[in-house]
Image (cartoon, rainbow, N blue to C red; front, side, top):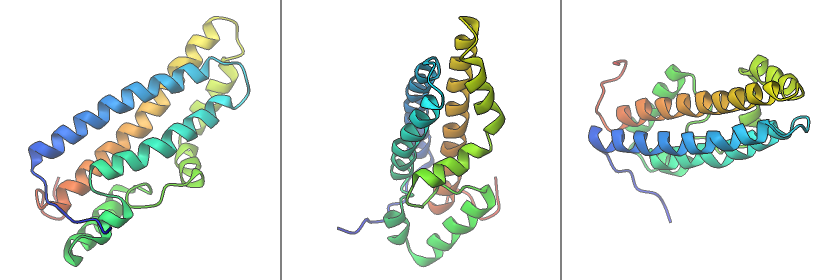
Amino acid sequence: MPAHFKQVSERELEQIRRDCQQRVKRMSWVSAGAAVIPVPLFDVVVDIGVLVKLVPEINRRFGLEPEQIEAMPEETRLQVWKRRAERGSELIGMVVTRELIRRSLQGMGTRIVAKQVTKFIPLGGQIVAATLGYWVMRKLAMRHIDDCFEVAATASGLYPQGKR
């Protein structure tokens, strides 16, 4: 069944953003919990699994899954792709794969390595690893929410091209 494009108000977009931010905060605790387990790269595997589930969910909420974008009028679709490129987001409107998530995590590489090392330091190291796990997950997902908000606002005609 094809998706249908529906313009949304700024108030609706703000509510979607708040809902997604709450979901990200909850899921970031999963990442923090996985970071304290002293198994090398276990937390990275968990993070990738969480993001593979979370990113498409955020895209869907903002109306930016591939089939939702295809249902947009051509002019709107072009604005979406242009705005997506301006924001530098690889995760909007794409089928999210583990490889795509892995590439997104590479930008956080230093923090991920630090998290791997610190979890093996008794007691304090696990706290640091959990904090880094929470922070990395939250930062990456919140950036995606902001990208989706801006692109969805442009698609709904709330912000003229190139504004904001």
